Amino acid sequence: MSALRTLVKPASHPAADALAKRGDKWFFVGCLICGTWVFGPIGAPILIAGLVMLRQAEKAGALIRPWTVTVIGGLILVDASVNMLAWGVDMFPAHDTVLGRTLFTGYGLFGDGAYAAFYNTTHIGGVNISGEKGCQFAFVLFVMPIRIAAAWGLLKMKRWGLQWTIIANWLYIAIWACYVVLMSMDFPRRFGISQLGVLGFWLEGGLPFLGPVVLLPYLHSVNRECWSE
Amino acid sequence: MSVDRDNRPGHSPETPPEFRNLHRALFVVAAFFFIYLVVEAIVMMPYFIVHFGWQ
Image (cartoon, rainbow over the protein chains, first blue to last red):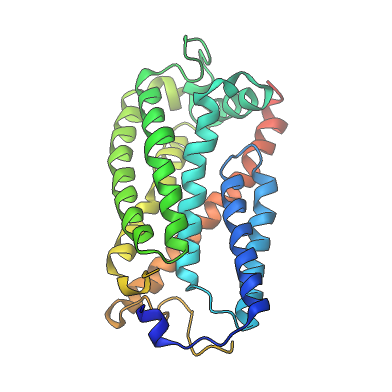
């Protein structure tokens, strides 16, 4: 019996519980769509609708998870989706489509010049820096699917979800270290030719990756008995 | 709320009492990053289309 269940004895609220479940699904799907970037403006209202449903379900008496877990799970989902679904557009032949080219050429002109200069000129397509491509394979095919599955488990208060979220975020930090060195060494032909320049380096290589630094102290200091499903 | 549980950050059951302040602070920072990523996702594509056009 979980500690959570022994702490509280939830009353039965079938309608509120159903609303909470529906809100959860909307939240999950909205986070993933947001992370595609291409359809980001569509994903945000879905995500917000999910949060509103969760709030309404809580008010109606449903026993929902703590809000900190929801926000942290959402942060992981959007971030992982960006690094899997959006970046996957560059990795797979979707980089030849109008949407793919518009997204990544714009991204290159704005922030990271590697996605604009000599874009789509190698046999594999997409960005033409070999180190970037290596990181891309590791992120898109390996670390980010783990993070998404782990975040879903975390949101569902499953023990494996908490454990795998911790593992996946440490993996993320390891790859971030690799990525920062890569971006620094190729700085002149990447951020040196973009609109943002140095600011782009911090906005793309620094700020978004700080998530795990925030998450790990939380994940390591929670009462694990709550994740007992 | 009809259940006897406090879901606020720092007060919810997953937070041990000694980590209340830490968890409250981490919630604020996590919420900032969450909003940052969602806003980025909303504005990114429209900004590229408007400023650089369809490629």
